[in-house]
Amino acid sequence: MQPIQCYFSGHSMPLRNGAAMSKINEVIKRSGAKVPFTPERITNAIYRAAIAVGGRDRAQAEDLSKQVVALLEANTPTGTIPTIEQIQDLVEKVLIENGHARVAKAYILYRDERARQRDRRNNGELLPSSNIPWSKIWSVLDWSVDHGVNSVALLNEKIRSGGINDVVTSAEAAYNEDVENAANMVLERKDEVRMVFVAGPSSSGKTTTTIKLGEKLAQAGLKLVTLNVDHYFHDLEMHPKDQFGDYDFETPQALNMPLINTHLARMFAGEEVRIPFYDFRTGKSFPDHTPMKLEKNEIILIDSLHGLYPEMTMDIPAEMKFKLYIEPLLQLKDSHGKYVRWTDIRLIRRMLRDSAHRAYDPEQTLLHWHYVRDSELRHIIPFINTCDTIVSSAMPYEMPLYKHKLAAQFANWVQKFEGDPLREDAYTRAARVNQLFQELEAIPDDSIVPPNSVIREFIGGGIYKY
Image (cartoon, rainbow, N blue to C red; front, side, top):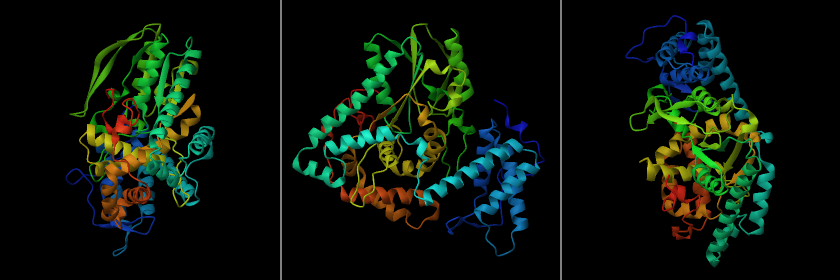
């Protein structure tokens, strides 16, 4: 990977205590809200753009951020509060004038993409229609209607009448049928497929699905080896973080994508490679750590957020890859005629998993979720139409289970973040889930969840080790 210095060649200005300081105290957001001006956000924006083109020198990003702050101070009249747009214009100016054309292009493209996303939201369009798996969604909706769980009112009636166990049995069977169909598709191509990806956004159920798919393929006689791409994370200090100290692990640039691609290509050529080891306790990567070689009759099975991202396997022929995309495609409508958001289901799943396995408070997960969603919209959703099959991991009974576990906290978050311009995203999500929870009947008993269910990946108590 080319170092960032190749793109940062301009003169820098000295920093005070390692970061840009400013006489400006506030900035006006697009919503009109006034928020504290944090120069570190400019540094992070520049650093992210640099990462997109292969650079990872944060000190250079800090130098350029200092120049932006100096220009902002010089061009902002006393008593005037600058806007977000004015600051972004100055970032582009500083990058271009210092000769960092590639970084500037990445920054401009990201800025334009965010603008188009806002326009789509304002027009009521959440995703480009070409990225929506309509056929699968209609199939799930049809199933929900047939089983009488397509609305909150109908689901509540199932819970009150004692019919929820039948819903559990039918929903689990539908999910397992999806996985079995995927396994059969791989088997139909077993003479050419060498790599199976289980891809999808955070907390979609990739790990359980990978295990189940692997079991079915192994039963059919295929020899499988797994590659944990999490060991390809860059050192923690090379990740961008925000003014709250929260690191962004969700972007594909958090992983050494070129090295993953190179290792896969070499293994398919019969070579042995040495996989890095990433120590999550220290945030350090140890290269050339674990030897790995692929035999001619073996298939690599990979569970990854970014399994559909082209750069990960750009040198692998398409016919050698099988890509499964997973998402909880729940079709459940509330009393206002709005469908439950899949991203809210996954947010709650991750809260429960992070709390149980990563010592993360659920509030930390909520405050981090804007990174998760931003990366999904940019790096995962656009590639759905490249997958070979889609599996829905949604269980109609899961939200009532989650209400019992988290309803009180969501109600508290609504009160805590209301009116806070720095936490608009957290408030919006908390308010939406809180409203849904107010309508839903709660299910306090986890025993209805089968021990091999995908839901056990998040609430614990299952038969699989994660």
